[in-house]
Structures are given as structure tokens and as C-alpha cells.
Image 1: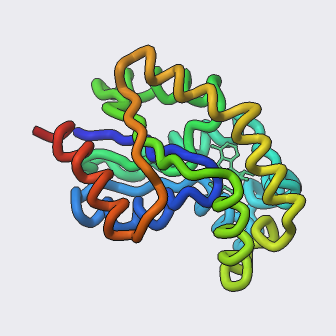
Image 2 (image 1 turned 90 degrees about the vertical axis):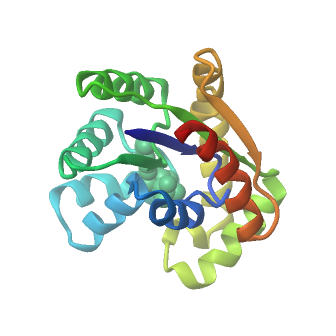
Length: 192
Ligand code: AMP
């Protein structure tokens, strides 16, 4: 199994790259943001409880998010591995993921981060907001809050995986193909 955390601030391109990489490497892509949006659209209990946080650009509470992530993994018992996109976002989530994967005899093999400057992120997200239909992409204040939350609560996970020698940073600015190539160099090495 190969399990990868695709990491980076909102707008870094995690979703775009995960969609390409899951086919290239036959991995299951789990985007916690996508799962929340699916649940909001279908007005499930989970969706209703997550919506108020997401609309403000805040994190959904850990317990809800962790249980959801575990359920998504459990749906794919035959997987060759996973690309986690948007998870973990807090140290509690990272600990839960370590423990959960360990109980399955596996682990996070690498956190690969897409590194992009803040001003480019805001530009990209406002542009995406024109077509994504996402309320949290439409408002510059909410976008800035999401980036702030990333630095306040999520960015520390770089150290978390660096200490385990499992952190890899990749330049997230360039064409989609160029960035896929940079990520592939890291993944090919992991899979060797
Ligand atoms: P994303 O699609 O990854 O940008 O996520 C959109 C929103 O979903 C975030 O701004 C959070 O409100 C929520 N969300 C997604 N993943 C997580 C997570 N791992 N922990 C808490 N909230 C999350």
C-alpha cells in the first residue's frame, strides 16, 4: 500500500493534482472537502452540521471529520493506497490518522506539499469561485480566513511529518503538467 497526504493551503491545487495522480498510480482519492460538500448537497445530518463551519471558512470539528474519514477508508478495503486531500488539517487529525492506519498495518508514507505564495492563492480561489459554485470561494474575506486557519492550525503538520522524515515540498506554481511531474518524481521514489 502507498498512502500519501497531499498537503498545502487552500488553492494550492491539491484537488486538481489528486484527480490526476489517483488514475496514474491507481490510488483512492479521499477529499474531506468533497465529502462534506456531497453531504451538504444531499442535506444529510453530517452536511447540516458541517455547513455553518464551511461557510465561514472554519474547520469542521475534529471528531466529526475523523469519523467521516475513517468511514471513507473503510469503504475501500481493496485499495492499493490512498491520496488524502484536505486531511489531516490539525495535529489531532494527524494523530488519529497515524493510529488508524497503524491498526490496519500501514501508515502515511509521505506528506507531499504544494508550496504556493498567499497572493497567488487568493487570486486562484477568486477565479475558481466564478465557476465552482462554492460559497467559500466567492467571498474574499472567507478565502482569507481559510488561509489564516491554514497557517494557525494546519501548517504545523509540516513539522509533524518532517520529524518523521516523511515530508516532501514541491513547487506548486507552474502548469498542471509541470506540477504533476514534480509530484510524480517523489511518488515514483516512494513506490520503488
Ligand atoms: P477543502 O475542499 O479542502 O478546501 O475544504 C473545504 C472546507 O471543508 C474547509 O474550509 C473546512 O471547513 C472543511 N474541511 C475540509 N477538510 C477538513 C478537515 N480535514 N478538517 C476540518 N474541516 C475540513
